[in-house]
Length: 378
Image (cartoon, rainbow, N blue to C red):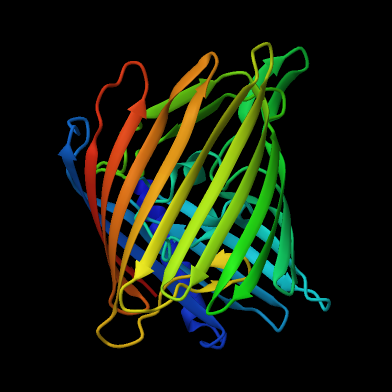
């Protein structure tokens, strides 16, 4: 509790300094988001806890520093504890490329790279949680080439993570990961929409063995912040991982369809190597006619065309398989139906119904889950 109060006080002081400084208010702004969820186990869900969950409560600031540089800091005060999100600088080169320095998302996965303010469903698909590496500290280079683009990143740990200290004949050493990522895409305009294809590869070395654990929730979090994980596998002698991702997206007016496939290979010391994979396919239709936005290889949100807001229906099928030979973490398949109401550009209400099928020897249930969300960002 003392740590929470201390960090909150530090952030409050930092934001106060920013707000009272001589920085132009149009160049540097306070930013934040609040995502409040309500969870209900509808069937076969005895291990889940019904109730409310503060999924995200972020506060930060960002904006331009000069004509070539901008920056952002953002902290999340969600139920699971305080965590650092984007802490980065970004600079422009004269030839059009950009450099990123600090903590930000590793370039892998269309769904992962879509902002949580803009994702179609309340939670991202399992492959985005299990395989895509999310935010890490590092340096990246990004280049736009008309309708195409690429981004590469050299990265290490995430802010707040600590290395594993091991003893060997040479004494103690810090066992921190180091990785490299590359993502490329092509987004061709097609009529009133776009056709996007992308691919990514990420290699990460754990430096002299590091235990790796892969697990995920059933694309929903209960009132405890998501304590229930129905697929789970541990690889205590993991040496490195190689991850591949493929992306497809088609937007045409109010209709959109998106698909992703990811595969992870794990090299182990003195044990069999492993390979895990998964995919998702999702589609949405905006009943009020608005179109999902797209720019620079990333999907944006829906902007209501009038004061009555926008309505969207969507469906997703998702699979994450953590079974491979001696590794029996389980296979999770989910079907999700969604109804979203966009009141304004910054206020949205969401409803998801999720059917979960688990292929694991010791589990014979098929939970049916319901989640509601009230979401605001500024």
